[in-house]
Length: 66
Image 1 (cartoon, one colour):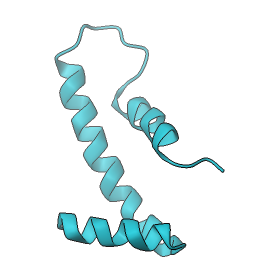
Image 2 (cartoon, helix red, strand yellow):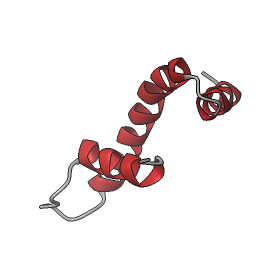
Image 3 (cartoon, rainbow, N blue to C red):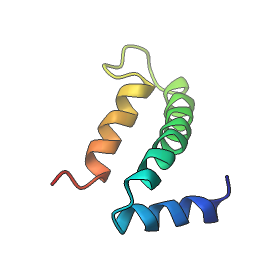
Image 4 (cartoon, rainbow, N blue to C red):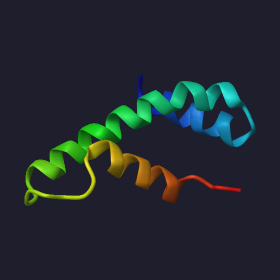
C-alpha cells in the first residue's frame, strides 16, 4: 500500500468512514511495532514496555479520545 493510499484512508476516516479505519489500523500498527522494536534494540534492557505497549501508548496519544 502506498503513502497515497494511507492518506486516502486517513481522509475517509476523518470524514466518518469506519471501514477506512478498519483497513488502516493493521497497516499503521504493524509499521509502528516495527519502528518501536528497532528503537528498543538500541536501548538498555529492562524497559517496562515492549514494542506493542509502546504502540498502544502512542495510539492513545495520537487518536482523539472523545
